[in-house]
Image (tube, rainbow, N blue to C red; front, side, top):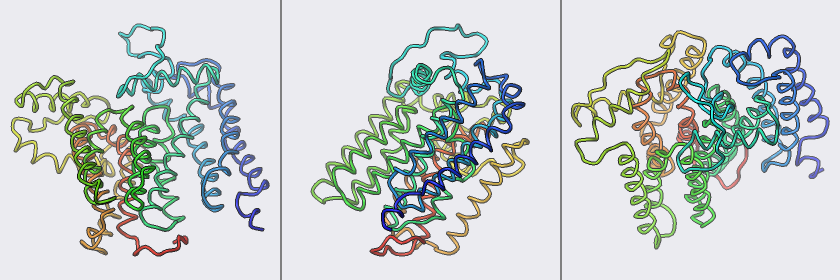
Length: 436
């Protein structure tokens, strides 16, 4: 009996695969070619059918993931839902936007009108997310053939893994498992959609989630394996967006200073601080900042370059003084985390994002009213708050200029925000890890 309970039975897997195939294959004949006109690929329908097969095969690996049977069943059900989103609902998104980054990654070069098609260069460059994803996609094309949708399914599967890794970090922080929080981390609309695109976001979320898992392990156990998990998460996240390295080093400094063996706290905190400062200086130099007087104009340039597109605001942020910038940052950070609100972006995606943001904001208010300042006694809560604040203050400059971009970038912070809510609401840890 014990062995039978460890993994979902074959009947459940067969039913799930049948539902998966039916939910995705039925709309194929009339939807794929018509709605894939913007995708720089041929033979879209055969490639879409191949993607269904790839998704079914990937689902067969889920019973071998670590976790309890009910967690695997939840993962399998969410994977069916995620494939329906990626291979059906996302067709409407791809039909509406003719210049998605995903198309450039797939083609191997920029699709802007003034670009010159070049043979893709395979390689890895630290922090060059665009080049790294392009190289990865071109390699996958050699393996899977020219099926855009199959490659997208692989990225979605990585996104599913990223959400589950974030859940595992929460289990480590809290000390117990929870079906409710597993569902929230897997199926919150932004997590479900944006970790399923062909692009940087699934990989960035995977890196941040791995970093959080390593941090949770280090906070609980303080062993060297946790440090390796932290380093892996930092490497994956910063390989896509280099500025995430100094952002994540800020909370890591706090973690090393407050937890782990006492003999290594000062050296590790010092190392994290040096890495944070060094990374920030390197980024500043790369942006042409060679003196303090160059900082504000460089920040203004970074901010304004995102003021393009249908959701752009192009609002002049007060960069004429440090005081003006400091006064703007709270509103900008709020925008990065909780905007657009309902009706701020007049399209279907904006409405859904607004409803989700309003729910997250209300949930946060409920936690404050219920718990007050009590959660601040937890080092895990403080660590997650520093993570969230570090990210939000940097992305304030970007998100404030383009609410459409804000809704996509927010998925990087969603694992942190949801874990913060979970840990803040959790009861004191018990020795058992029963579901709550």
